[in-house]
Amino acid sequence: MARFYPALEARHRDFIAAQKLFFTASGTASSRLNLSPKGMDSLRVLSDTRVAYLDLTGSGNETAAHLKHDGRLTLMFCSFDTAPLILRLYGRGHVVRRQDAAWSELRRHFAELPGERQFIVLDIGSVQTSCGYAVPLYTYRGERDTLARWAEKKGTLGLLDYWREKNQVSIDGLSTGLLEDA
Image (cartoon, rainbow, N blue to C red):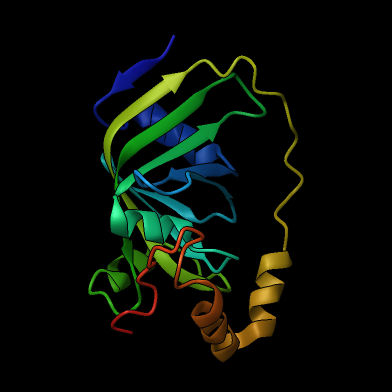
């Protein structure tokens, strides 16, 4: 049932554009594996072999730590409301921060969102589709505004303090690189 492709095709891009939710998975040989849900219109397809998402401030920064120390990243999309399908993007990822030269080029693809921390860029090595027959049907009701309200209340300096306290080291003690060269 599963099929692999070397790059995104037009139908894959259309499927990704229609999704309100995606998942990231990362890890290192010695770390815990991290699986995180993402939303808020934060992902863009940049080419048939590259996607990026605007990573918002969260309780941890596991993906950045894993990419710094390993580089492997998987993104997964599921259809919850139409024909069943699961789409996975496998590849190598890297982080782009405000001080990086690539920041301004990536930034132009995204609307401003409160709590912007960094971009996660995935260079796709392979694309996989599978059936998704057991994925339940759900109805999309809208985005939560909790993270946006929290980030706006923190403000720029409050977010920086939060990054210093909570986002510099992974749960396994790996450096995230968040404030390096900042």
